[in-house]
Image (cartoon, rainbow, N blue to C red; front, side, top):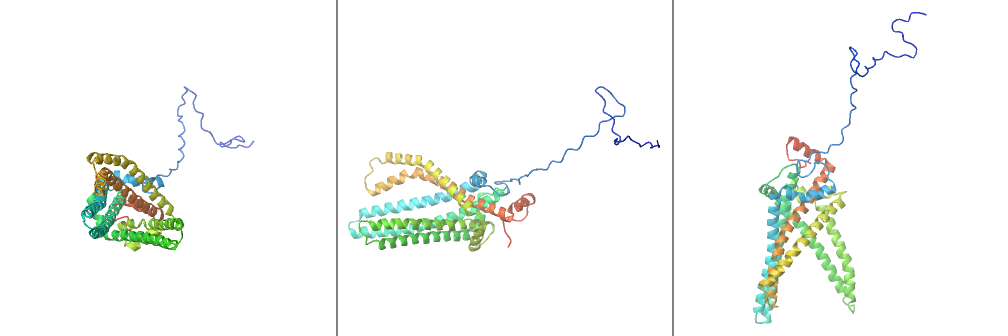
Length: 384
């Protein structure tokens, strides 16, 4: 057989194998175990963006939106509770004080009048004074709502990037956008007034149209037709309210004027109408139920206190008003607190919806992450 050389192997043989490992207790000079095989690469799973402050910097779920709406108060209580309680206190005191004050004075003067002509003149004057007081309460409500929208919007936006502005800083920021917020609040008030006047005009027209029917059939027809009209106007108002709801955030954070802010709010809420409506309605329902539950025992306590202080109060209207004022005082304190917290939660929910929509449609979450890591200009101002 021809010489195959030193590299010849038997048929079916393969390359030279490593020596077998030693048996237990046996030592082979020069033998070392083979190096371990490298571990397989493990792909990293999704790591959510950081949460530097109030919310995580990525599009938010409905639960995160709802929870953060109330968490704002705990995150920055000084810049939220203080202004909200002051604004709520002024609104409630003005409403209650002017209502009861003008009512008591008017009733007392009417009772002291000596003839019917004087009583009529006093009643007309009291009604005119009451109308002026209503306008004063309305102006205070508009101003207070504008300030609270500005303050809460700034607090939530700064909280998203891990900052806690003080109350003075938030008030100054809101003051810079005060007049656009006032104009926006007045616009909502005008829409409400127009819809109420339309409903009132419809009711008056129905009453006149069915006035010739006997046996109160006209009243029944009026009610049956007026209810669907009222529901339709209510739906129209809430449609515009939701479509305009993000305008205050645009006014404060993007420094836009009223009409451009409304147009941008209309675009941002496109495709998220029911999500926005659901959050607003749920927050309002939670605040209303909580307010009723909390204020009920204080109303009972107030009634008991007024009964103890005025056990022999007469049946005249003046005494009834005074007893009612004293009896409602404890519930008023609770109403101020609940109303303040409720306004914060409602405005916060709208600001969070605004941030969430911009994260989903404009990549705001990436801009906020960059700002948190590197700093820079205001990440909320939108160019173009």
